Amino acid sequence: MKNIVISLKTAVARREHIVKEFGKQNIGFEFFDALTADLARPLAEKMQLNIHDDFLSPGELACFMSHVSIWQKMVDEQIPHLAIFEDDVYLGKDAAELLNNAGWINPNWDIIKTEAFADQVFLGKTQSKISNGMRHIVQLMGKNLGTAGYILSIEGAQKYLNYVQQIQLIPLDQVMFDEFIRHTFHPVYQMTPALCIQEMMLFPEKKTTLSSDLIAERKSRMKKQKKKGWAKVKLEILRILKQVKYALVGKRVEFK
Image (cartoon, rainbow, N blue to C red):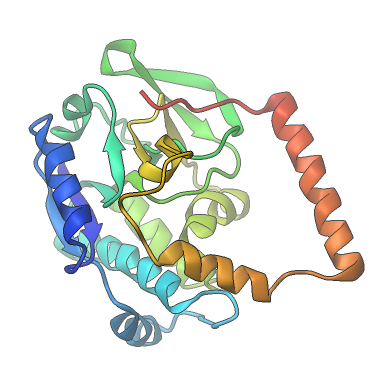
C-alpha cells in the first residue's frame, strides 16, 4: 500500500519529523506538496466547488484542496488503496504491518479513519479483528474530527469526490468525518486502537514543536461567526446535550 504525507514544501521541521517517524519502522512514504492558498482557490473554482469565505479561511481551503487533489490522483492513476497522512502525526506500535501492505483491508472498507481525535465517539457494535487481534475495525456512527490519518480505496476516493461536488464547502474534517456520515449511506470505519495521532492531541499540555498557522486561521474565522443572544443560548444547550449523550453511550478511541 502506498503512503502519502501532505506537507508544504517550506515545512522543514515537519518534514524532518515525518522522515524520522516513518523511518523508525521502515515504512515507505512519499511527500505530497500541499497546495498554497493561491493555488487552492483556482482549483476549487475549476472543479466548480461551492466555496465561500465565511465558511473557509484561505488556509482551510488550501488544506481541503490538497486532500481533494490526492483523491483525484487516486482515481486518475487507478490506485487501489492509499494511506493519507498530515505531517504532524505520530505512528503507533507495529504500524508497518498495516501500512506496508493492503492485504488486510476488507473490500467493503472504502474509508477507514486511522486517527485518534475526539474524547468520545459513537461506534457500531460489530468489530473485525486485524493486526493479530491487536486492533479492530468498527463502523464510525458519528462525528470524529481530524484528517491527519485515514485510508481510502479508489471507491472511497470517488465517493468523497462526488460528495464535495454537491455541498457548500466547510472545514475538511467536518465534511469527511461528520457531514458525510450523517448525510450519506456509505459506511465510514474507525481503526481502534488508532494507528496515528496528531502532536497536539498526543501532548496537549506541551507547546507544539510542529507549528501551523491553520489553527489560528480557524479560530479567527470562528470568532467572527460567533453566535449572539438567543442563538448563542440555543447553541450552548445543544452542545451540553451532545456532551451528555457522548458521555452516556460514546466510546474512547485510544492511540497505541
